[in-house]
Length: 75
Image (cartoon, rainbow, N blue to C red; front, top):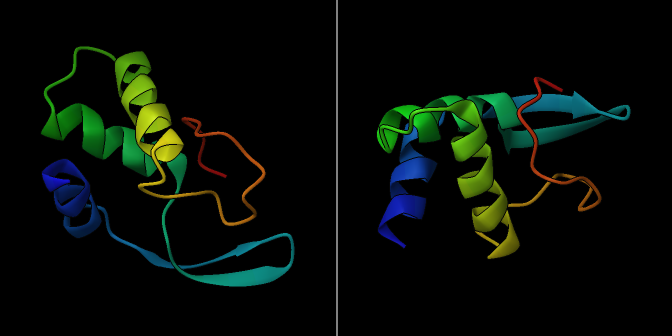
């Protein structure tokens, strides 16, 4: 829970467009990976992806369409 709150405060969110729809207060997977790697002092982006995947599995956040897995991608 503390990590999730720190993540919510630490990752900057903004309105983005996905599949021709605007999504307010959202972030990209690669931004989450950047933050997780730095905040947790992880040695690789792959480890940050594993943490992000687990957080998503635990419903800490979700893809805007609920259909995509967590990924280290800008889109």
